[in-house]
Length: 203
Ligand code: TYD
Image (cartoon, rainbow, N blue to C red; front, side, top):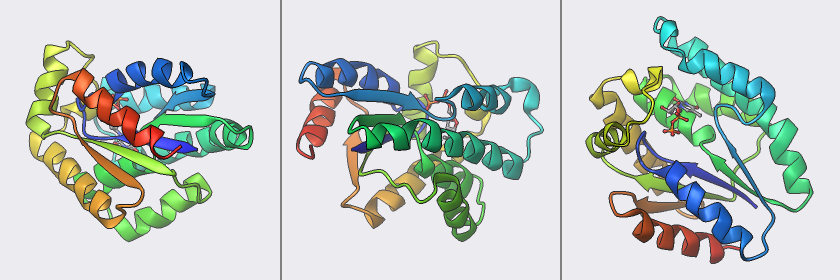
């Protein structure tokens, strides 16, 4: 089973993954946790180019191709082999992030993006996508109060992050059988309970 974790910056996906992995492992499940961009040696090198504050002049088209390059490598090197071995893959961001950030956020052509994402993933779609929903303002406030590292992607304006959020909600409404929307503006324990039950009910 291939499960992805999506949401705006500061939605708490990573905190939830940290709680979820041991909870699933305690049930005897074989878990592979990964993230985007990155997750492989090549992908991590691409990630450092994407995130580097020195690269402020990066064009959105260049940015998207880097995200897709990292993803193609991750699919072939880790996700497909892990699925073939019967494992459960938990991936922190995947193709929906590109549609939300580059499509809805930056306004790139979404039909073109659909084709590009299909090419990058070789057509591999998640079985389940958890969308951690939080307003852009609450998400950024949370990142600042957690003293999380500020990267080039965080530097985009608040309106950009609002477009990302509403893009995600549009995608979730279009594919209700794949998405579970989780209210991420609550305590980590409350959110964890919902995350666990969303996953266990599908296994
Ligand atoms: P990261 O530090 O991993 O943030 P988070 O903990 O919020 O996942 O940074 C990833 C950033 O890259 C985040 O702002 C979302 C953005 N991103 C895209 O714009 N497009 C993509 O396809 C992906 C995978 C991420």
